[in-house]
Length: 337
Image (cartoon, rainbow, N blue to C red; front, side):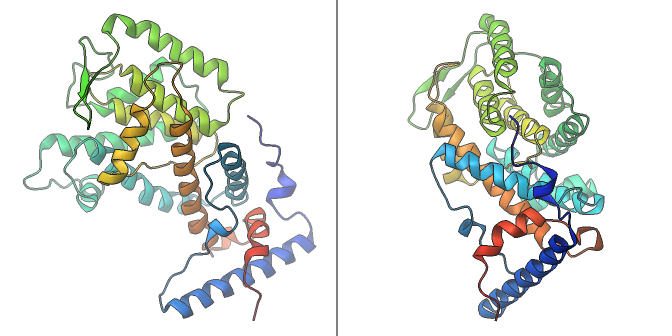
């Protein structure tokens, strides 16, 4: 889906007048942040981006907001490699922690960081929990590489992602479809059985047909939600379906220039996530709108986080970046004093 706003003249200052305007808006912006810090008596402050892009549950409106926010993010590109590394160091470990925690991993966020960054083992914690952290981080690196190379998403990619998730944990099943029935017990005590094994080849084939038939016309964030939701409903693997589905979702987002989006593991928020997934029971004919809305809101939250990070970057490489972003927020800044 081509974003008509994503044109160079909207993203970067192209005249001396626009460059001067950008300098003035940035000075106004930083003065506004200073005023917020003085008032709150805190050392950091964030401009409330919801003033510009308010909360909404209307999907077309939300997708329009995401298009604008994506243009805002693009206006900071190319992002300096050191800044990209700093951002990824923060969010990738957070993503690994949250995604694994949803599936019952016992490592805390700090423990996950120590395992990944320092190769430490945490006393009293299972070996598999350590392997899950290392494997998931490797899988994130893999989908980032795929996105950077603009590689196509196909069945081999799906199996490779899953193989990384179960590496060293369930080697026989890593990168292979399940050979037995699976079911889950829902929060209401009801038993939900996933499709029979003999149906998997056709369901996976239909999954990729849906992707190829719709990937160029559907909004990228909507497609990311479908890829996640449909894969969970097929449940093609004996284990690792949730983590693989979330990675596939984020692969599609990365391929379209969106940041990695994280689903919270906190119990109450996790239950909302499970409920929305469970409301969509059909492989192809369920109501996907509630989950599409859920994913779109997560993507919006991630875009907010990235823009907060980038707009505060005062390194030399960022000096003339963010023109579209700062022009969008300028009308919402408090008048200069």
